[in-house]
Amino acid sequence: MTTAKQNAAPGSVERTFELLRILATAGHYGLALTQISESARLPHSTVHRLLHRLTAERMVVQRELNKRYVLGPLAFELGLAASQIYDLRQPCRPILAQLAEEIGDTVYLSVRSGSESVCEDRYEGPSTIRVITLEVGSRRPLGLGAGGLAILSAIPEEEREQTIDYLTHRYGTYKSLQEKTLRKAIDVCRNQGFSLIRSQVTLGTTAVGVAILDTLDNPVAAVSVAAVDSRMSDSRITVLHRQLQSAAACIKRALHNFPIRS
Image (cartoon, rainbow, N blue to C red; front, top):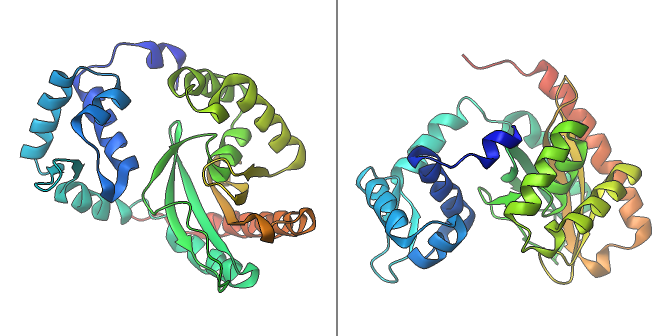
């Protein structure tokens, strides 16, 4: 990722994919035309034209009841095909399912997708007080949420600086993604070895995250746990940090032995 590429005026292909990313973030709720236009920073006429073409290709569907747009059946079919090639969940599932059972709370697997993190999987522990802060498939800018912040903090410095510059300009309306706030959160995460988010995305909820490194020590994903504040004392956060680090190390070893699909 380069600054020049980020600052270049997007063409129709880039604009189309931006709309698909925005709709992926919205999930099953969908978005109205005006909301998509505002998020993409594109004129209504441009967004309407692109959505019309995506609808014709079954990548997008407009619901009759509320006229909101959601991802279409072809997006689902492509996702199923891609999951056969890029399914990180397979080596992670037994490790994170056991982790969720041990700690009792909800565990999330988030993967990096450029300057965003995508919730790849979720594992619910046996606690009677469950916190669901992410839906599988939802996207967030890196730095927003425990998993995304853990990934961003582990990116090599030069790339991290470029990513911070992009995020603060693109998503600066989020308080947690304003430059001063984001840099402080990254510094804290790097110093303590884990991300800690309190009531940032969901009020009354605390989340802890650790980056998952591949065999070349590149951050490809993150494992995080979220729970209500009353279950997240300082002493428990210390324990969770160790458990998450252990799980991340196990996943790294599993990735080393995981066969590449042909």
